[in-house]
Image 1 (tube, protein in one colour):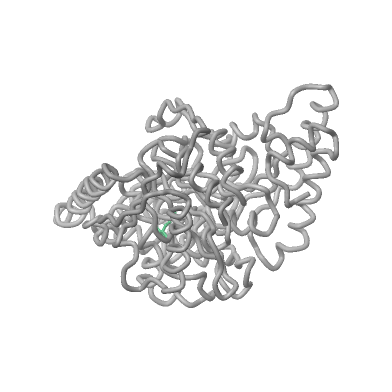
Image 2 (cartoon, protein in one colour; image 1 turned 45 degrees about the vertical axis):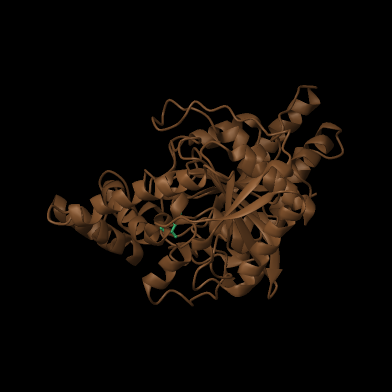
Length: 471
Ligand code: GLN
């Protein structure tokens, strides 16, 4: 049951081959058996899932139509609010925070009848690439429990890979969907900025954050994306956007750009080989492949870590023990409460970023850092626009490395930041990008990153579905 796609599950549910209750039970059993080792979940919500499944079954019993996602077990990253369920963002400061409302994406999935099996582990406030920064312990890679699942949406990707959920929601600010998807051998989409509402997502860096789906197949990820996208009055940056699947896609018309900057020094040769082999398959099927260049991509990581930390320093001001978050109440005065609460309950990486961002935005340094980083953003946008004049998609690896050993990159923060080399450029310019599993080496999964023009998620899914068939 847990190996079915959404569409297969939907048909079987409609034909009464099994009930929504039975589906959920089978996934909950996987959680029970595997999650003590894997630790994909911070807060499992089995009871909620069973209650939701019951409603779906009642609907079927009444002979009513059910939507495609009805009864689909879904995991939700613990930075996205599910009403009345704890939402920790992987931080001690929100350890006891109960979400007062549903995020828009959650409400949309709830309306479709999806069932929520639990809230998944992540790096504290989404800051990291391995979930090792979570205050609630690390998520292990389902392919090798001594290795990381990637991050920050590591719990979401691992839960799908381990059949603890059929699909999951993640959020991607600098790679947090695509990287764990690649590390866990599943599909992940970072949508175009603005296509999915961020209402009810605990903000990290608001000009970069975007919620997206994680699933085992491109078709399943597409179904979730279709359900969650669209304009939302609660998020002024959301676009009036109607998703339409691309039914007349022909690989023979596809022009693929291969950015040489994504195959630079430090990329593991075997990953480059597998990514190139996947591109070759499309070429053999009729696609055109040409080399392109993104000359300013080399500055993306530096610009990202200035913009990210600057926005983090502003967004996290609200977690002060008064407005939000646990309070260290022994303070002598208000400032003391702030200092003590933040000092005690925020982790090292979070504090580091708040300090870096505050510094980058400070009066004497604003022009030298923040403003300059924003200029890099514009140059990068021009690079992509120029490249996309001749190609429809750009391909490369999502990660220069394989899933690394737990603890291998925790000593020096810069070695962790390097993991984001190939994922952050698209966040800076708001483009959609999908990570698709394309092979294995050393028994670990390897992904392909497919970057598209704004609002061309449908092309990314069409290409991914084609490639799945060619595999
Ligand atoms: N690893 C990146 C960072 O730490 C990406 C995080 C994210 O996308 N949330 O900033």
